[in-house]
Length: 226
Image (cartoon, rainbow, N blue to C red; front, side, top):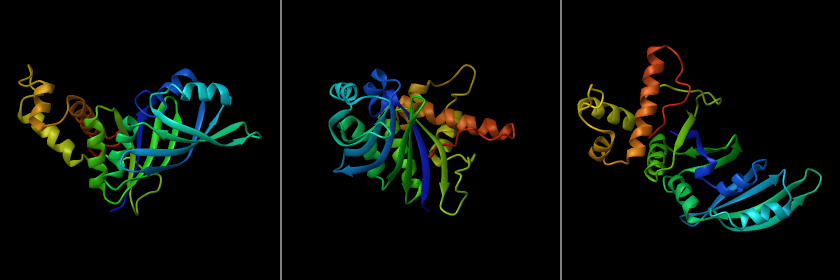
């Protein structure tokens, strides 16, 4: 069933990282995002709260930006409209979305976080995309998710995904939760053939969901479909 999800990434680990570091007051509004080839991502972006000279000086040295070109200038609202081409490093994250049939519906920046609104034909494809991104040691949170026909407000659900169930069950069987522990996180990650970071994130999300169920409270963050 068609699934829409909101994923959050730190600006330090994704597109325009150095631009945001150098221009902390910069405001960004992404008009659209398209894929050109397997890893090339080309967004159309409005920049505000900066001038052209300062912006382009930073874009010139931002390692996440391969090329840029100004398209328009909205003098009334003091906005600059650019076509950007990200480097392969950023493109590889987006490629994880595209290669599993995903589409970027929207992208926004707020409080040091990128929020990507994505659409996938099936939830399993979203799960695979998130797992691939985590394998690149990129920290990512799935904030909200909804399947077609459900509440459009993207309400949080507390259901564990299959990878989370597998990870937490294997951790229990291998003695990760024993005192003292029978297996380290690194050893458990090797057993599951995933990265240390990916397993840590997976267990954290699963434990948060289970704790929320015990307290009869919402998880606060959705069980990420990893």
